[in-house]
Image 1 (cartoon, rainbow, N blue to C red):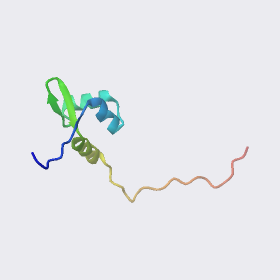
Image 2 (image 1 turned 30 degrees about the horizontal axis):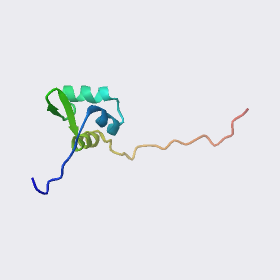
Image 3 (image 1 turned 180 degrees about the horizontal axis):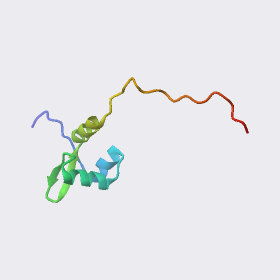
Image 4 (image 1 turned 30 degrees about the vertical axis):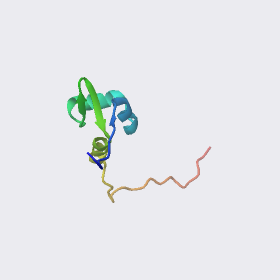
Length: 78
């Protein structure tokens, strides 16, 4: 396809490094259907866009109810 950008497929190890999780977690998530993947024979390959979907789905919203931690201003008694 002219003009189409080639998107490389990642191995489970490469995807794990991208997500900063163990490779076993990526393999398990792909096997159970929690993570979109492509199977080429017995090999599992992942696209960056699918990993980004996973990241976006897990992103937590910021709430205004969060109270910042404040240290006690008194000096410790040693």
